[in-house]
Image (tube, rainbow, N blue to C red; front, side, top):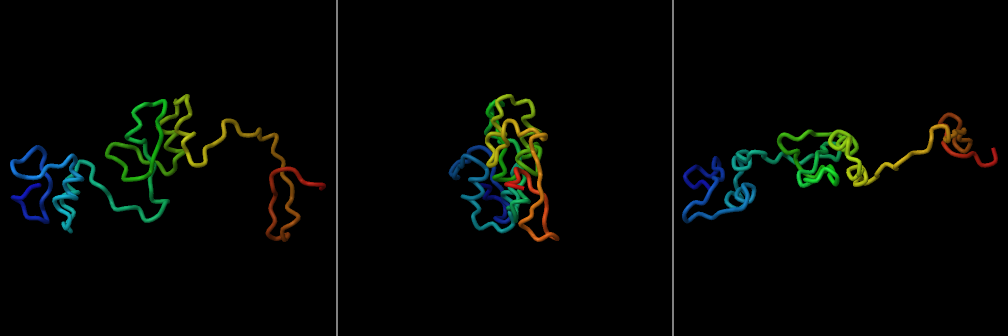
Length: 149
């Protein structure tokens, strides 16, 4: 902590200071030394400062998991701010395609909540039929087999 600077403007300093508490990370220092700081100066002084939490799921961005050091098992996450220098993607699939397009293990796509199948049905195998059970004005065509019609 920087006790020589006004509390609202203070940040954490690197290294060990005689008689002052020390922390393992700058974030821990900001939380521990400046818990009531309303200016956000301590967090703003970080190399990759946290951002305001997204308001909706659509606001969250996907990025390569910084903990995924092995390309063959790498995945994408959206559980925090996008680290400085990382590419932000709108979806998990876009992130996997952008970051792991040559990943032969398929680990990134396999790690998705709704992982794509290895090989979808051939387009030639899909047939459509009219939905006779829905009002004519709202009806659409449905994929699959038409039972008895």
